[in-house]
Image (cartoon, rainbow, N blue to C red):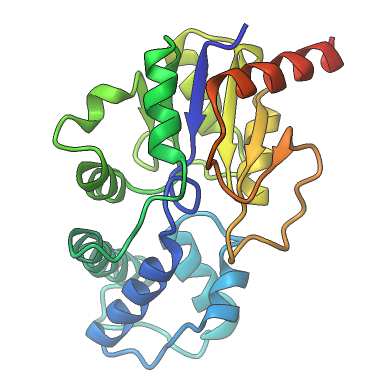
Length: 241
């Protein structure tokens, strides 16, 4: 029986990646770097989960000639870049530059009304989650979710299943009683490794990912209802039995 829906955040709940990209580039300018990520480069970098990890990967592979900035060491520079980037992203959300994806809020509302639990399992930062959902749902947004797991609680990033495993443990539910919602290959791999049937809604940055093993791949959650999810979930349980 389906008891809970578990949502990724970036790219799944909202079209966030263009705002994240602009925020990264803002941070580079603020720190005096001549780095500039364009859409094709950022699309490739999204194979690396986590903002700090993405900066580190770029630095190591494509800007290795830059040794340090400010004398504090590379990790200090990465931390400062990410701090500036996060503030810029939060401002973009507050300014209305980030929109929730079609059908997400309606499905969440219907799920809660039907007695399903909601949870978040993401590798983004708590600040990013709060900025997005405070604007989309309201000041009481935390009360809509039974469990919230994020980069501060699950340091091993997707495709490692840690964030999903911790979410399930805190909810007290086995994976077979839940559905996950993701937009990327790394997210799918993490959810499946934790025993979760997974609905994928790709975006422009993840459209070419390999979604083998997904329960469904949909353009968005528009017109997806609880009854339909229960039917899909039930079929996935029968197949795996």
